[in-house]
Length: 273
Image (cartoon, rainbow, N blue to C red):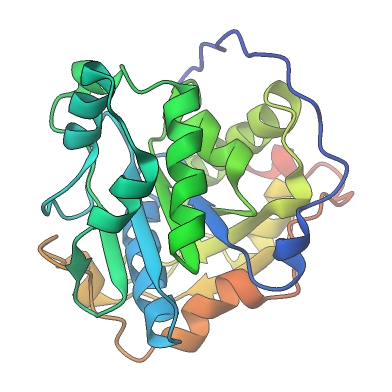
C-alpha cells in the first residue's frame, strides 16, 4: 500500500462556493488523480471534444515530473528560460502555442528538464493561467499525481472544475479516496467543484460496479467513460481520436451530477479501506 507523506501546506481560505463560470461552462478544467487512472488521455480527448464544439482550447501539461502530452514547439522549457532571463511574458506565451489536430486545440508541452522546471513558482504559473484564459475559451490542465507539487496546487486552486478519474479496481478506488480526503482536509479545496469520472481503462469486466465505487467513496459518479482501444494505443503525436464519444466526454463537464459528499455508512470498509 502506498503511503503518503503529507507536505506542509500553505494555509488557504476555504471557498464557500464554486466560481460562477462553473454553473455554465467551466473555463479552467483541471485533471487530477492517482497514477493509472487515465487522466492525461481524458484531458486530451476532452480538449478535442471541446474543439469539436467550436471552442478554442489550451491543453496544458502541468505534470512537471512525468509529462505525457505531445511535445510540440513552444512549451514549459521555453518558459523556464524566459523566467531565468527575467523576460517572461505570459500574454506572448499564450499567443505562441502550436495548434494540434483537431484544429482549435493549442498545446503547451511539459518540461524535459524537471529540475529546471522547479524555477516556475506560484506567481509565474498563475500569471500563465490567467493569460491563457484571456486568449482561449477553455483551459485544460493535466497535473502530476503528487499533490505536493506547486504546479499541481496552482492548477487545483485556479480550477473552475476538477475532474478526478477513477478506474473500477479496489486499490485505485482506495487510493482516490485518500486523494479526496487530502484535497478536502489538507488543501481545504471546495469539493463542490470536484467531479468523479469512472474510466473503464481495460477491455474486460470491471472489478467493481459503479454503485460499488460510489458506495466506497461516498460520492456520486458524474460520468462513465467506456473502454476505447484507440486511446490505449495513442502514440502521443497528436491528440487521441474522439471516436464519436463527444457527448460522453462533454458530460464530464456538463453533467448536473456533482460529487457532493453523501452519508453512505461504512462505505470505505467494504474494501478494507
